[in-house]
Length: 429
Image 1 (tube, rainbow, N blue to C red):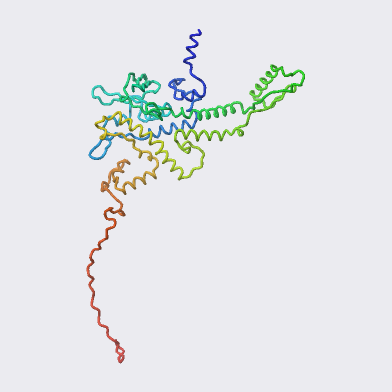
Image 2 (cartoon, one colour):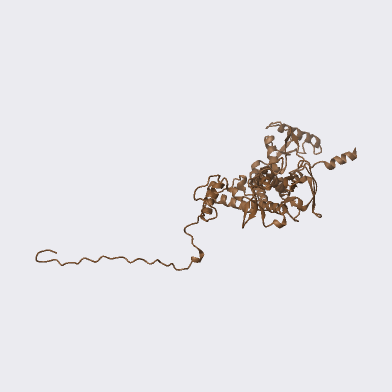
């Protein structure tokens, strides 16, 4: 029996808060009534962590992925390609493109690594589907650069070379294996979890006080060596407080000294604010995006949005684009094919910024009116294919040149009528 107990203890999952935070995205999620239930006490139970991860995942999933081919001197999107359907509609048989990219970002942030296995059609040798495998089912040999995958859900099992699998990494120290953001934010998430548990306990027991039961050792019958009786009194007092009693009587010379601090004294509100800011720093998300009660104005909100796009979201998009290009495009076609997220979709709901951007691109001659009308699903108009530019612009070669005035035609003048002096005699002019 001792050997069996040791085996059970070996595979028993840790129940500490640190262990739960490290194994936040555990593959063994319990089921109840056929519905997945995420274990309590994990980092995703912290509202700020959930919001940051969900926001980054949704932001990437909302952007269309464009597969472009070189035609002439420009890249044009190839919507008839099989890759366009896989990247934007249905990568595999059991998942849509939105769910697919959401899971990719979640795996990258929570597990540190996201693995995508391209499956090719044996007859046409085209990509048939993209399988996102669970990182817990992947063993990465960093020395030989091989991946051993055994994921029953995705239907993938085998050993793959580094060039045969798409590996999207989070922050990495060696360039081969990504590290989870939660592994660095473990102390902050544990602090937030401890604060949540303490708040829950205070609401559960109605804010009961805590303290120390003592007595004067000089009183006869309650000497300094009668700890057992004193412990019984403390247990009885604790049970009465837990039962909801607010005023209790103490026997003899027993004294009760409260040691618990109120929520105001412990500054729970300030602690929770500190946790929100710290978690946002780890994920690179501005506190206003997680509904923090910081004072914001229109300018600060606009700058926060720009910083989020340039410093937080764009690096994630570049990682995915380059990994798709590196693994799905042959080296001989490297300069003729590319993958790119359509970042203009970020302003799909900001109508004011979208209209200003469209007007400026038309005035600069980048887009025509009909091109934007097609983007808005509107019919073309007559004359809308003409490239327009602002009338206030001139060529740089014309700067500094004197302007030549056109010769003016001579103006014909009529001869003036003779002026007669007035006749003083008859008063006539």
